[in-house]
Image (tube, rainbow, N blue to C red; front, side, top):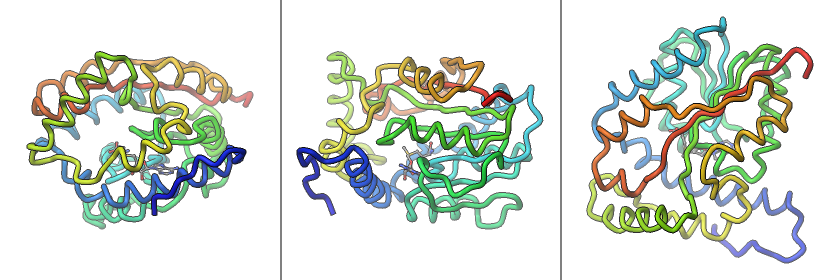
Length: 268
Ligand SMILES: C[S@@+](CC[C@H](N)C(=O)[O-])C[C@H]1O[C@@H](n2cnc3c(N)ncnc32)[C@H](O)[C@@H]1O
């Protein structure tokens, strides 16, 4: 249930917990429409992301991957196709049901589990790759999440976080989004769940919600003690969406996808 939660004097932790209930409720409700919104080019999209993940993992020998905030399991399936033993984790039970459906429940070495990206239910040093896509922007404590991701990584392991400037507050971006959201009422893949009703009351408690680019993400990676921290503008991925998304969803999601990557050195 959505209730007022901006109580004066609330501890950050308390606010974070309450935000998570709201976020989980939103993604439960959004799961079916989100899983179905592929604009009819799923195979090509999988191929583009496979090339992308291969590019950023080619130099490592990777076996066990964790896809945090897996949603309907898109990156989990790609990594599993690349031969990895993959765990997809999400807070939303309905999203996990979509993920199981999308992967046909029958793949070897692919499992889905419910959990919190900021408090992972895994032993230390048990994975050699952590990926996330479009997750960090919606976390109340992204620093805590990175600390956890580093903990469960083996030394020498890698984190690949894909995100975008989804709610960039720049006036020009806001205008484009506003037009897109209003036009998308007429689109077949419109969001049937009232996003603002859920996120407006909590957006100020989500540190990366209004990030206008990768800089804040880079800072969090550095603060978590990761080494080789870099970002990439993912030209191929962005070109794919530019060419394949319909005009309305391009306007409604007028953001660029970028990658922030880092490694766990032997010294952490
Ligand atoms: C925008 S969707 C992205 C889904 C998927 N990664 C993708 O790219 O298609 C965000 C996902 O993060 C999940 N999520 C949000 N907060 C989370 C948390 N604290 N722990 C785990 N999952 C979370 C949501 O349930 C939702 O499935």
